[in-house]
Image 1: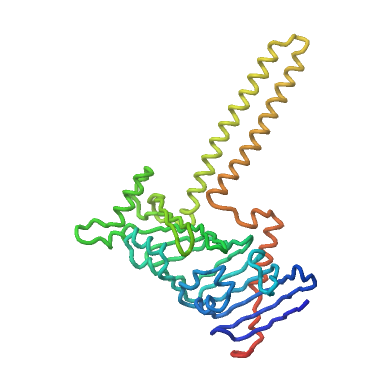
Image 2: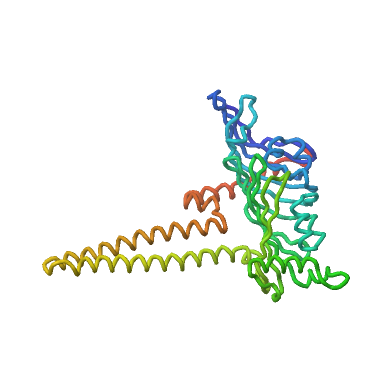
Length: 355
């Protein structure tokens, strides 16, 4: 077993900090448990020099700028003593110091559909985002950015094989889209969105803001973009807009399942009562008991199914955070990791430029 304690170095234009251990006591399953910090590191430099970045964050090659990150990771080592990414479990913060994403087809498509060319070059400066890596997939928790007039919420997952499932919810002022009108005054972005909205019976003729969700699937190298117009409204926050569809789904599920529960309960009562009416007077008390038993059982079964279906609907709409899936203990664990990484600074004892 080899332990590393607050090891720091200058590398690739930034600073690297390490703490943790490698365990080779079982040569058939050597393992590692490492805390890693990168400070003032260039995105493209990281992509060129770290195989892990190439595999887990290929989009870094399309990013200009620098970032900081603190993360905790563990897993097994391969026979060549490099991390087996299929067993990697990690979580941490990614903080952008200055970041510009360009030449990414999905953002180019969004810019074209909204007729806002500047959206093809996203500036993501001064953001701090929590991410998790588990079972070969990277999960980016939703975060908010403002690109000139357009508010965005971005989040989703991608796998080691680069398959992705991301959502970008945009909230755009109608006035900003109208400024882009040329010639006849008919804005191609507004016209496109109006046509898309009509497919779903959504009216965007009124409202100060137009809200659109872009679903990014396929692979990072060969992405696909689908669009859904969510509607128009006043100045609600991007978080409220992103969550409104989920709440509507939950409410609809609750109403539907409540109706089903009442119907099933009435049916059970009716059947049990019909059976009781046919019974002899001497058995009436027993029949009444069976009515209540049947009704309670039906209510319990339907309530259980209702809870399961509501939970499923809610999960489909907004996704479950890892700590929610793990319960209170899981939440405590995630919070502990966040607090540890937030406070860990392997560079604070080192003089500027020191190794």
